[in-house]
Image 1 (cartoon, rainbow, N blue to C red):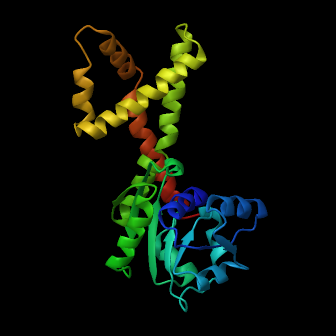
Image 2: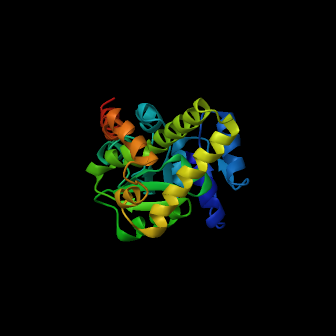
Length: 255
């Protein structure tokens, strides 16, 4: 995710340079490639803090304490932008001694500039900080701002959401193949259908329920399909999936 964000940001902000720290040489090389060589390797996490106006924390939440306990962000005062799921602003402030912290939950479509990101700002963050983070994230997609107590729900909807959509596409393809289509034909139809439906919602601005009703004729094929989905608990399964991801994000804060 750090590579996806940095790659998009590097394209829209050619004046920026990156200082990066990672225990993996392979990960460092991949990051350098994503920003077209506009990065230098920091000798430590502390050096990254000291040399940067903004610091992005992109470690696994379970490794946050290990990665950050040796950092003193109080003396150099960078804006800290965390993309760690579940780790609260207060915990990040405690670990890094940083004063200005913003939590961000991006998703993998940031790789192609079609991401959806939620941000939550700490109490010491000013308007200029929020504007800056919005500008950075808008280079890789759309951004919404929410209170911190809603950022776990953002994780459930959009952070983990691409995986639900990928699974749905898998199922559409499998259904087409089961009815006699080749895998290639079924995949082309499934992917384009999901893309087209999403763009129709965006371009018309109408509620998905209204658009669904328009293509559902009484006694027709779409109604038969929707009735089957309802019988199998499709709608509630998605609602429950969002809830499960949200709950797991909250649990990560305690680990």
